[in-house]
Length: 110
Image 1 (tube, rainbow, N blue to C red):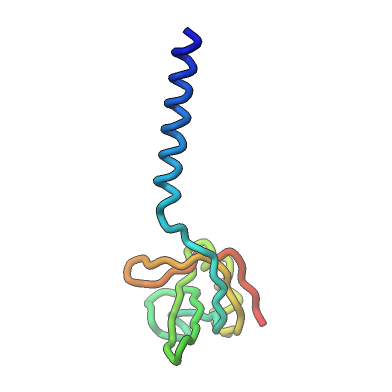
Image 2: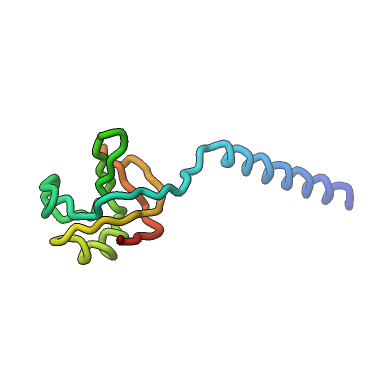
């Protein structure tokens, strides 16, 4: 009976390790810090029909607009809607609906 319990426990542990290994094989998004102008995509950039908090950054002479995730937009929008501010944003970047979206962990204004 003990042997059976030990075998079942061993198989369960092996399955747990293998399932974690397959998940670990996927690319995990790394936190990045982006510097630029934090502003409103509607009021300042005139790119959207509704207000959206974004950071505009330049790399190699090319402008990139990163949209804040919905929760961060609500939290930070009042400070930048009518008055853009230079600053830096730390978070993970992904592409959603054809837009680059940053899931914000912190915002620092200069």
